[in-house]
Image (tube, rainbow over all chains, first blue to last red; front, side, top):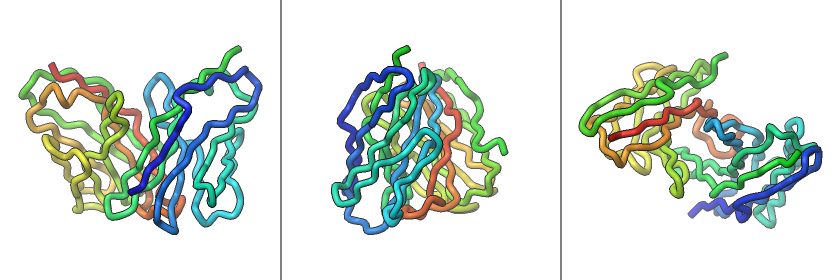
Length: 115
Length: 117
């Protein structure tokens, strides 16, 4: 069965510093996609970044980048130059196999950026 | 593009009432889905659709109906509201259901916060 694990319930980071949020996954599929979403206190789910299992390069999107280690089944999110607006819950997710296409989410990590 | 839109943003119902949560997307996405988010339970898939005229059940479909008459719209109907359906409901869409491609990226609507008394 597919599973996403985020082991950091809460993290603090100083404004303008970088922070890494951990995510490990378990799947027997050869082809899969990994996603990160941000959920601020206002409640919406915002897509941040995608990494495909066959991508040879780590994905980057502005201040967001992934440290994708396929052999270790991990895809850690790195946020550079943290801003106060980065304070939110962050979810790692995998698109499920089979026909449903559902997203399988981790438990989430709450990030607080300190001024 | 407006992306994925949902209405209403907030709703309070009494037990036994019915209502429809609206969801629309303007990205020509084939795949659409409904999730509910509850504390400690994460996001759970209610129903999904891989194209107009095609719908199927997710993990927690009981008490909900869906239809997909157009590519753009995917309404969720609560048949007879119960307090256990108090939750935040998200509609999401993606170009495809394929798991190994960025085309499978699901974009979420802003959510509907539903309270059933």
